Image 1 (cartoon, one colour):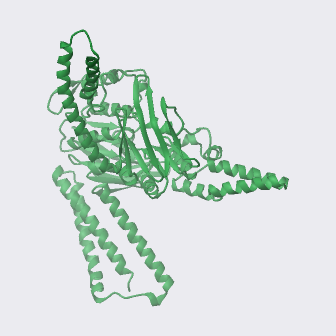
Image 2 (image 1 turned 90 degrees about the vertical axis):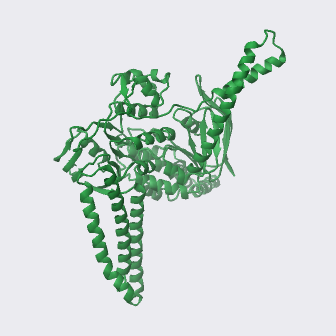
Length: 625
């Protein structure tokens, strides 16, 4: 059953053609992602389908009777209203039906006529159709789920993440049949992303979205559209399948371009020799030459983000955090945290929004001061801080001038120097776009410009606060390549689990109330351990509940073999804990080189996994008498 049909849709802005003559359809239950470079029309296409922009040509239709909802990348919410007032003033289909039902009930009470009874019956049927009877319960459930606690708060006082969560709750409240999402994971923490990921993957709704979160994309979507050079390519599969097929298509394109290039040279020679009198045959050959020329000169979108900047060598002392505390009023953000960084260390930072991740970065970079404790930075350390909000740009300044204010030339890893203009090209700023005013840049372009201005200073200790927001997947892959080759220290706050897995050796986990746990291993390993603990706790709770229901007769005893295993488990766990503690002391000493640090970190991660498994077994045996 087709829910959306689009035929020959085209859209351009001035001389820039975003897409031309694209045709596609979405069936009921399909979950589709759109992938493209920034500025090539992803958001524009979503806004067209949501009825917020018009096409230059072409048509699209949704199936009659289905509910369509759209969540924008930056939801436009009335800042002057409270959350309660915003909910009541929204154009929610459910709220509209409830208001109509209340009106009809009042009319029926005032005049007992056949017409009023008919209106009441119709309104009741509509309430049934939209499941509006339990609206209040679902609203409270969603607000609690998205951690919206005070509905009397002004919308203008909410953080970016809170606004995104509120907008998401209002969209899901209507239970749409067809959902359009533009970068739904931006400004959400990992816990919330994983909930949304699970909800959408299990839901029967039809989905069309733009996202750069590769885990999210791979686990939710079963179809991918790629917008490239104005065309739409369709892939029936997940992100891994898309990468494979796109690489094949790109190889074929290069072969065709090479062949067309050789043919173009021959045709160009013929054109130069061609007599002035043009026959119909020669005219058709000239037209064919133009097609060959287009194929031969067709290039992949955008430039390449290939970066190898020179960084000064780090000395023996890098960065030491000693018993740092930070409070905001009575709220503890960081409580007695200590850590010594080693050379080449790569730390990912995760935790709920508002638990202090950015605060730690601001303390390290000197933008904020601790209430107590100290942070000592080594003499050789050159910090580079990529901030989530970015700098305040001069909006009327052109891009190249903003970069030249920092440096006219950049020293690369091999000792070469390149101009600021050439360096901008590495960041996919074409010569033309370098003369754009900053106020005209897209979100992704501003992110790339900010990153460039951090790296142009040649840091050897790089701190990145949510660097993946607004970057397309192609820019993300290139950024990862650069960071993998970066020889300095790296700290990353990110909700992008794929990005963290690829670039961090261990994690600072912000657990709330000022507690920061150091987890040795990847995000996937950490997630697995957390899931294992949840399952163990759930099983233990279930066993206790069953035992209470069944009474004393349901209790069973440990066998001789199980008793022996049970007695030995405590000793095994103690030995593993002792080995883990000793290794953590070595790792935190700050005296190890990167390779030894990495091997010991891997061993710690394995020890933690073993401890969790043995603890789970101990808890199972402990339930037996």
